[in-house]
Length: 488
Length: 92
Image (cartoon, each protein chain N blue to C red):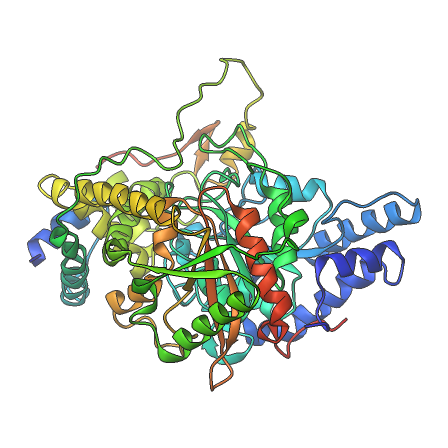
């Protein structure tokens, strides 16, 4: 744990001139060159941009100017976050060559702080997948064992951070896409409350579920990044920004007397090693003075089909814009406009994206709308109410992040429904717009990381990060680094 | 259950071609996915009207003129342009 860079440690090293920002950045660039062939975490490297920024930071340091919290820290962005002048593809053939002409708000905020952008990270195509293997660039690999997947959809970010070739990464989470790869790669992943972080410039998958958040090696880093990016943004009509003080200030609060809830439905059906690790964490919390309360959340069994109906419905609408006319890939041979659009989409989208567009179109089509979309939307309300009720019994909910550890490469994509089941513990949070953080809670017999998530009520990021940090302090060995990357 | 004609109809609505070779696997996948989606119809309590999450409501901005994106930059991402316009082939 001590060998890898974390934000405060690196900021101290920069300010005390133990290392220059250029040297720090170069060490990450060198390690990316060494490791990315194996990890496939980056799909676009931006060393020139990184070194230019590092130079600016070094100039500030030489003048004795104070640095902001993320200034000069090497980081990455998922390839669905728009970057002015830097190709952004969502790891889809249909967006190959697309260069955004504006920055996503999160990147605008970080760029102004001189965040050092090392590159754009790998992801499942349009964030649709749980293994990163639907990426048109091939999947990112797990830094704890490259024969296993990094998870998805933000697999590249988790692989880069877990592989110590970025200090932190921004990912997006529609049904678990930050937390699931964070769990698989043994790092921390925070999915903020819907509306806490601006979605402006995030290429849309399912707009009522999508949310940007950080992937980091420590809870403190997640808090620092979240505090920096959780600002109200007039460019996002669902933006509210962070409600309350900086989360990093309350990480060390005592959790004595706090009620941590466990819903039986989250624990049933997960693999034995995962259940055992999560229940061990509950014991740690008891030893820290928290009270564990058990309850039922029977409506959870409908969360996954509700999620897939709503996410695919929204995706079928959001992805209607890819027609080959304004940006990205365009079919070469066609007869007329309709033929061009159909050929562009058929040749440009991968199989999983096509499946989800088709399912989304089906559930929205005349004759099926009431039976699927409307019913799922109503059930969404029922699930929201069930969580509201749960938070009258506890302060946070403890649950596994994924029912299993990272699967081996190539094992995830044969049966779509089987793959969807891996999202069973993560999707309820997106359905309800709640915040949740995945933190490492041990390793299985094969040495693969296990993750648990702490789920809070809306805008309670400070509480879940506090609870997560208390575990991290008590059980630092759960946060063991992989052998890859920069050693400091 | 979903049949091949239905898949072809949905594909047309989605502006996607489905080849004869793709059809059997896609029909099986869609059948499984729809059967999975169907499990929500076992839920008895589905009468909760869902409006939005976290009580978000529309906030209208003032109708002020602000700088827009540069037209040439926007057109820079298109494969075919002509005199400041996106070029699209005529319908045959």
